Length: 376
Image (spheres, helix red, strand yellow):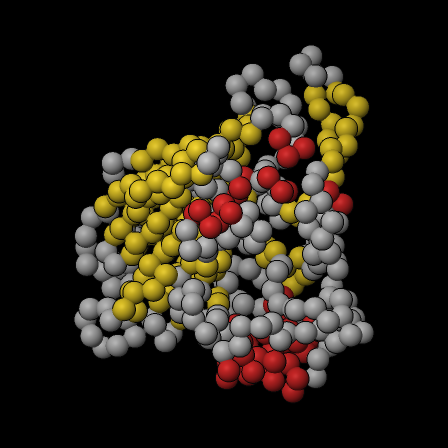
């Protein structure tokens, strides 16, 4: 049986108080004619995570602020961008895919269709079939499972009395336009860091397998789609003072003007804006992006960033010139710009591709001394 497995570890590095993980179920939210949205809370040390079965979502991750010299935190902030409640998330149909697991296929499928050749039980091949999907990305491409993807579903939930919550979802043959019936399992756990005496680790294991008796093949690529702001989700500075480090990512995939990879893999050494092999602030990277990828003058690119840093504007002022982006960029005129690219994670020859977790990124916010690392 074909099985798809994705592991993610999020390490939050904070002073530890060595408290065991606690887990509890919060009051459920009733959705008329749809059922109940169950909510859960995991706590360890000074880290608190709230989950819901709507999209198997991370509703919040609350971290302490250790910016002062005090031995105890002076404040706590939610660092995940999400709706105020799962009910609001449901009512707004989560068009930004906040907090949730997306699928059956995360990211975009060009022109909202793909071709697949199924195998007969006797081993012979059928004709190639074209499968048409929702074009929910600008009416051009298929994105994150379409209008009724996994992030919009109410999953079954089961709470373990130790440290984890398990969510499951059944996706039948034909769901979202995809062939083959599958079962998805997502397990969240909050545990102590084995390799550090500080902070906590939020672990997510995602499994996808064909339903019993299913013979049709299907593509599947799951992703947890949370957005993070370590300064707090309501911070006026947004993420410009964050420092991003991706030591194992020295290549990325360029995009066309609908954000589909061009099938090329490019070294970050060719494009300074895309290079996070050494730690750098998001503001510095965006200045280089405006210069190299958008075609702005260095002065205008710098001014774009400084405006947001100075006035805390919530409006997007990162605009591409009317004539479009620089040669080779994927940007149309008068549109926001920034990073929405895939990076290639380097693996060692002795890595087991099916089980070995690799460090993807380290994100830190020096003013609050918060840091998170992502292994996948």
